[in-house]
Length: 630
Image (cartoon, rainbow, N blue to C red; front, side, top):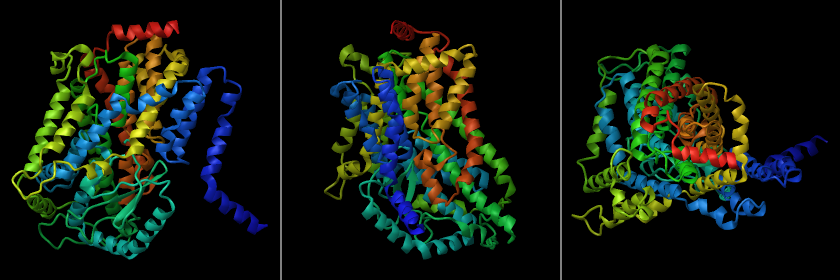
C-alpha cells in the first residue's frame, strides 16, 4: 500500500503539468457550458485560462501566448485574421526594434563604459557606492531592458563587494567551487530533458537578453551559466569574468558561508573594509548588507523601466491600448512621458536609497579613508581603453533615435513627421526599424583590421530576439482586443462604477495597489494587459479622462520588488546572491509603498498639467458615448 501511494505520488510529481492543465480547463468549463451564448463568458474563459497558465506555466509562456490564434475563432470572438493581427502590431515592432538596438549597445560595451565611469567617480563611501549603483542602474534601464541592466551590474557589484569584505567572498566562492561541478552536471542533464519546456538567456553579461518584463524565455544551458526561475520558467545566465573575478564570480547557490566566516580584514590602511567582529550577530549583519546591495540593483532596474514609453512591457501595452481605443488622439507621446516619468523615477530611487541607508547601512562602520574598492573600478575603466569608433557610432545613432522619437509629433510644436501626408506619417516603429537598418550598414572598424562587421551582427540579433517574449506581448494584445470587442472590459468596468462615489484620488490609489500587487504573481505585461482595459472602461463609465487611471496603473505594473518570480531582474539577483524569499519581502514592501506613493503624488503634481488630465478631451467623450450606446 505504501509502495503504491509512493508510486502514485511520483507519477503525479512527474506529470503534474498535464493534470493541472486539464483541471484548469474543467474548472473553467461552466463559463462555456452555461454562458456560451454570452460573448463576455466566452472571453472570460480565454482570459482566465491564459492568466492561470501564464502565472503557473504548466506549458511555456510563448505557447500560451498563441492560444488566441485558435481560441478566438473557435469561440466566435474574432476571425482568424483579427486574432493574428495583434501579434505584429506597431507596439510589438517597437519592442523588436528596441531589443535589437539594445543588443547593439551591449555589443559595443558602451553601457559598461558609462557604468564604470559613473561608479569610479562617486567616491568610496558605502552609502555613496550604493547610490551610484542605484542611479546608474536606473539610468541604463531607461534605454535597455531591466534584465540586461541587472546582469551588467552584478559582476561590477561582485568586484566592489569583494574589496569591501575580501576574505568572506573568497571563503564563500571556495565553497561554491566545490559544488560547481555537480551543479553544472545537473544543469546539463536538465537541459537534455527539458529543451521543449525551458528557455535560457545565453551570453556574457554584455550580451544578456531580456525576456520584462517580464520576458524570460530561451532554451539552452552551458558551463558557467546558472539557473534562475521566473514565473515557473528556468533561465540560464552567464556572468562574465570581465571584472577580473575568474575564481570569484558569483554563481547560483546559497551564501550560507556568509554567516559562517569571520570577517576581520582591515589589514590595509586604505582598504574599504567593514569593521566587523567574529560574533554571529556581526556576521549576520554582513550577510544582510550584501543582500541589500544586490537587491538595490534589481529594484532600481525595475524603477528605470517606467521612464520611457519603449523601456518596459506595461508601457508598450499602454501604447497599444491608447492606439486601439483612442487611435493616438491622446496627449501621451515619447517626450511628454519622459518629462513626466523621469522626475518620479529619480525621486523613487532617492527615497529607496534613504530607506536602505538608514535601515541597513547605518549598522555598519566603514573606514572613511578607504579607496581600494574605488581603485578596482578605476582599473577596470582603464582596461576599456579609449573610446572606439564602434562605441561612438552607436551612441550617435542612439541619441539620434531618441531625438527622432521625442520630436516625431510632440504636443507643443510641429514635429518632423508632419512633413509627410497625415495618412502616411511615420510612427515609432518606422523610426526604430530604420535606425536598426543603419546599424548594419556602418562598419564597426572602418579603419581596420578588415574585414569589419557592422555595428551589430545578425547572429547576435538572433540571440536577443526571444520569440516567446514577443509572442507574449502579441498574445496580450489579442486578449486586450477581445475583452473590448466582447464587452467584458465594459462589464467589469461597470462593476467598479459602484464605488464611483469615492474621490478620484482614492480610486487611483486602489487601482495602483491592485496592479502593484498583481504584478508580483504574474508578469508585468500580463498584469497590464488584464488591468488597463478595465480601468479605461471605468474612466469612460464615470466620464473622466482615462489617462487619470491608465498612467498610474501602467507604472504600478512595473513596480515589482517583493517576489523573485515577478520579473527576471528579481530572479537573477535572487539566484546570484543566494537570497531566500523572506530576504526580499521587507525591503520589497518598503519600496512598494514608496514607489506607489511617488506615482500618485507625481500624477497630481506633474501628470495633470503635462497630460491635461483636469479636463475630459473629445477623444475620451467619444469613447464614453460609444460605451453608452453599446
